Length: 392
Image (cartoon, rainbow, N blue to C red; front, side, top):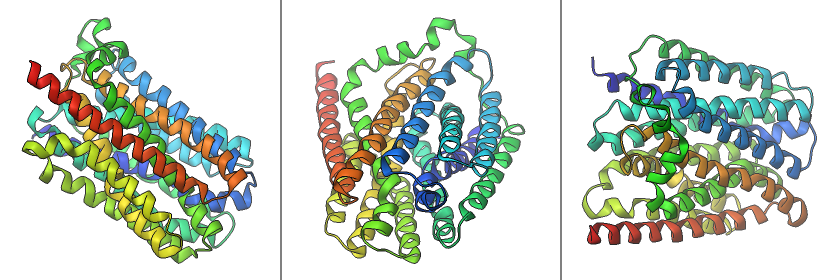
């Protein structure tokens, strides 16, 4: 059986848990957690940043682990750790314990995302990697849509967010079990000499993609600020109800699925080079729409931001992978993930402090700035790649 037929949907399911639930679910349940574990937005922003910092470490460790372990071993281990982290999160008795658990979850999801995405992309032919990447990242959107009702349900009664966290550990365990049964591609990086799989080599081969990495980092800043605080803004700043929160989060996830699934249809010929600029540009339009105020503008903005939510990492992952040699593939993906994670780390800690000073509405301004700058750098990358092709 073709390995890709199993690994691509498995990777999509894994990202549904690793990012759609374990990471973005933090913003979904943040209003409920703050009721039981009081703290300022600045403090909860620090927790989100710590989570992304450990995710960064997990991403950096993945290529190193692949020198000793197979794709399957890293995938299974990572998702066992994700399940353990979600169970531990449900037992958090203080903000400090929650922070420690979020750090652990960040490390586990860093290993999980890179092992899922990397193994799946290695299992398909180079010309099919963009389509495969789009399908895989759609898993994040599916995870968001399926978990949307949990946010409203958790708001209705203290402690329900703990039940939500425990329930989310189940699919992580299931995917770890499935990962132990399906075939994974041979890890070429593991058979290569150690220097060939260093992260620095991925960075060197992406030296002509600096603008792409900056665009991806700014996207990480903008989307994670939005995903972390948008429901807090809706409930606290716009006086939205639990039902409105469900509609916003569902719209956010549903359009994310539409954006990533439609991506392969427009990734042909001349349109391919415009993909990154378009996906972050539509995020800027969504942030601008959200500034209109009121629940209607908030939901419309969520739909626009969602269109580029998973399409952007699909494009960035495919771009990074196709610009390097096969052996350096895992390292290149790690470099791209690190760039995005660096932006994500900066977002919540800065925004939490800004919200405490200027109010919840200020988060939308920061999202708009981040997405706009991302679009500028994405366009610069497009022009740079065009000049390189013309000179070669």
